[in-house]
Length: 130
Image 1: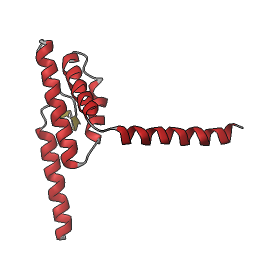
Image 2: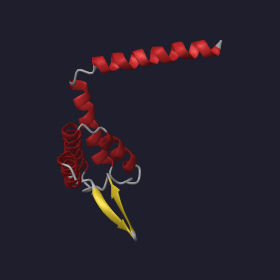
Image 3: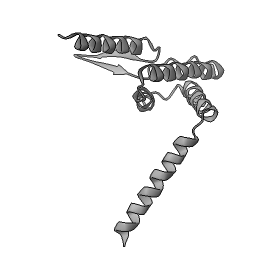
């Protein structure tokens, strides 16, 4: 194994260890198969506490995504959320926090890029419709 491969493996191990430290990520044994879930939460039965918990989870999610330049964690969380119906407050806090970050960030370049992509798509579509 070369030093470059060792460094890559060490970095991956570190990333996985940090992922497992997130309080809403868990490895679950389903018989012979071990699966990772990205939304294992426990509601407290207090909506306000759950909203605060969700905000904390969102902050941890964004910190992880930024540290590892990995936007896929958010997608994995969202996809896993549909399995849990009793955690409304945690979800509300989670998304309110992310929305708050989006509203305080300079997203104008992102919006402009999305608009340009939409205009390009519409232009291409018009060529094929005639």
